[in-house]
Image (cartoon, rainbow, N blue to C red):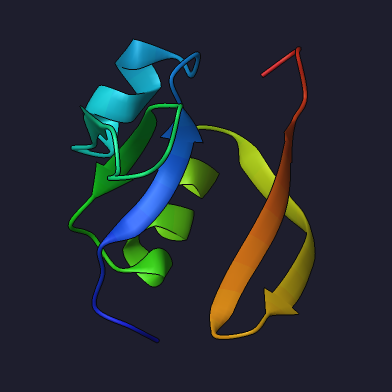
Length: 76
């Protein structure tokens, strides 16, 4: 897996969760939106999200990009 950076959320993501991922809010040149980016590798991000109660339900490859879909049970 790549070393990072890893995009982990959009501008409306939970700031507390983004803090646990050490993600910073940034706006990429040419984009009209902000996104959270962490220096962590995808493996480290997914491991931390699992500790927070998130489960991977799907993964897709898009060119050289991987996208994961996660789910969190509200009871957790």
